[in-house]
Length: 157
Image (tube, rainbow, N blue to C red):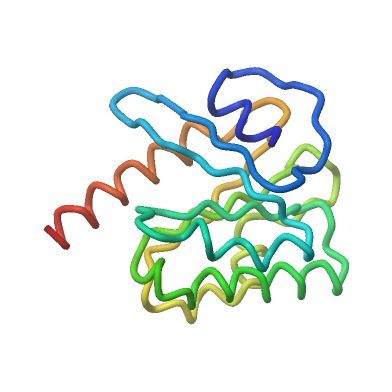
């Protein structure tokens, strides 16, 4: 939710973990995205699939500052569900390695390794290091996403 507000408004707001979902339109240059912010807690993951139909990309946020084995395994399992969903077949996947402002946060390369991204074959995947509270890295992330969506659109049209 913090990242979504940074993308849409360029500002930080006090947030609580997303319960359920919210829809927000994000406009950056020629890019206009309707972004579904879906709660990431385990009890909400079973509803994720209802938001996959007719989507052109997916953004997956990882708390790079929490590298406990349990959380990283949870992130890997959740991402695997996204990567194998038939409704998202072939769409670009943007992974945000968030909270880079916290000492000890995993680098983007470390997040990619932890998520086993070198074995992803059916998606164009990019990891971008971000700081949701300041917006650092989000413009680059959205530029990559825009280019990847456009490239896929041309390939499939």
